[in-house]
Amino acid sequence: MEIDVALVPSEVRVWSGTVCIVIDELRASSTITTILDGGCSRLYVTAGLQRARRLAREHGGLLAGERHGYAPPGFDFDNSPVEIARGDVRDRVVVLSTSNGTKVLGWVAGAPAALVGCLLNARACAEAAASLAETKGARIGIVCAGTLGRFALDDGVAAGVLVERLVDALGLRGADASLTESAIAAVRLRGSYPDLVTPLRDSVAGQLVTDLGAGDDVPFCARVDVTTTVPVLRPGSPLVVERLVINAS
Image (cartoon, rainbow, N blue to C red):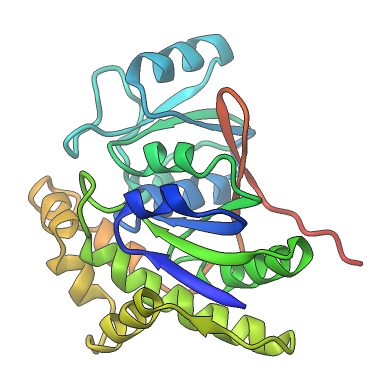
């Protein structure tokens, strides 16, 4: 089965027949996973601030997200998984709007399946993607959300971990993995670092959140395989992200 990586988000526009995993490591993917871990009743994602505020009003929801790293006026949470984990979203509607990650999720809404991946859920996400791709007869593509359309180091390194987990997951299912050149590059990039905190901290996003006083998000997001929560996109208007449940057969 082919595994591809879109190192910049625009590459996903030419994909078809692909189970997609969207990665915005610092921080939207990690925040989405943490929100669902926190037991929210419903999670809406939208790129637009006006729509985010309207959805929150209509559903009595909490607002989370950022613009230029800061929580917009009137928001309850920044785009910070640490802040979310310390807060209380259980049984609450949450509306998330960020600069990059939520926009890219809209681009993959028509995929056979679209998951949200990060280091926190790497193994669980890979296993879910392998199962879905096998069921749907599709290949698997990892989409790096990037920073304003450009390559982001934190996403590339996380993609390398996801590719490694996908190879393992496919092997356990008796399937061979065929890596594209960009997938190989992501694995090599991850292997060039002795740990995961370093590339995340060195990335543009890592430097930004540190400068903004949210440096605790970096080691929080650098933890690997600490949750089995796999967010899945439910296409429609507005977009909803839910915790994936795969029925045993």
